[in-house]
Image (cartoon, rainbow over the protein chains, first blue to last red):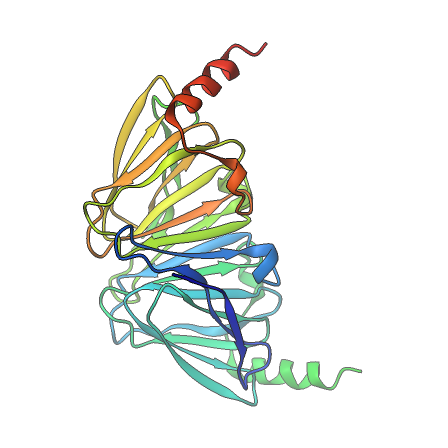
Length: 150
Length: 150
């Protein structure tokens, strides 16, 4: 059975929740797919994966100036908090078909990882340390400035 | 501890074995990364994942005319056979840092999946059914023709 991609907005600016196109087949196994040009607002330049994360560990805790990301917990489970400086939401990511688009200037935090979690992140830009905003007050200031722009 | 990317060739034409750049950290957890422009000969246009594959099921069993792929078993384990029409090799994929580059005109087959396996595939082209070569004899004929080209 083929399920087509569905996309939902949420209260956090620009964050979109995807249920990826997938085929469920009890004999051959399952397949989930993402076509970048068709489904995403960017073609990724980089991927990274986090795994073997202790359940008490928190990852993320930053926003990006320019880089957009797409997060899928491809095995196990973790929680993702997103925050645009005004609204905040938390999602449980626990299947390969569930992806979350996080645009620039949205604060993200991952926590409550299961011992077997593997989080796949597709990033719109190469790795660039200067693109990270790691101070929450600086982030709030940038959001305020951004919103006051004509 | 940071491990830089290493890449090895094998006996099958164009197939390359990657150990991805990764950080091992028992407190924060582990991270593996792949920068497309720096590490890969293509920028992927698509990803797909196979999961919940019965151990007796075989996936793949085809080559591509144009599409190159990069395969990572991000959780669990599966075996990958690659065959260029002359040489054949089989690899056990069982960690998020182990990636295999499979160029066009290489036959690939995945089997012996563990119950918890998740195979991530990065593809150089959008999905195109006409790009698949599903008949092994046709594949052998194409390889022969390709090798006889000036």
